[in-house]
Length: 133
Figure 1: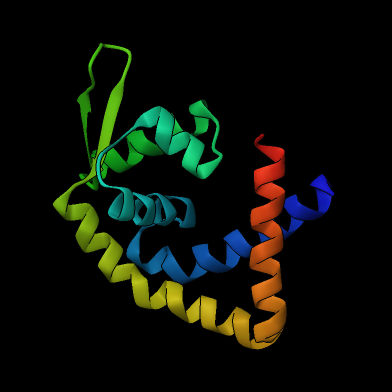
Figure 2 (figure 1 turned 90 degrees about the vertical axis):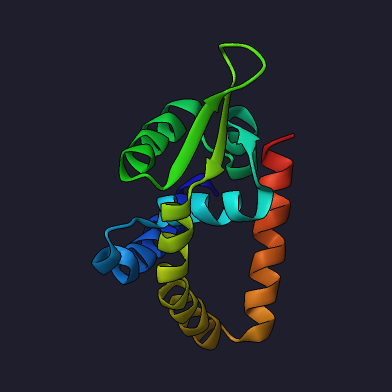
């Protein structure tokens, strides 16, 4: 199961990375921009849980995004907590990438068909929920 999901994940990430490469952004970064756009300001820990992403990988990715000015970080209630939100440059980058992202989504949906697409989304959400309990 793990090997199949990882292989599918790598193949999908490559499709999205290829589409977003001209904009200088990776699929993982774009996903973080999407989540922050919807969630508003969140702690880094909460963001990691939303993405099911380990702390080291998330920290490394956020540092790159911070250097680009796509996110804004600030200390939380104590020094250990970092709060993250989408910066204006991140909003711009997100908007620049939406049409490319949607093009890949539409292509995959056409190739899989609506029913299989919907079933796959439901199944992957269920697997994520079970695996993160």
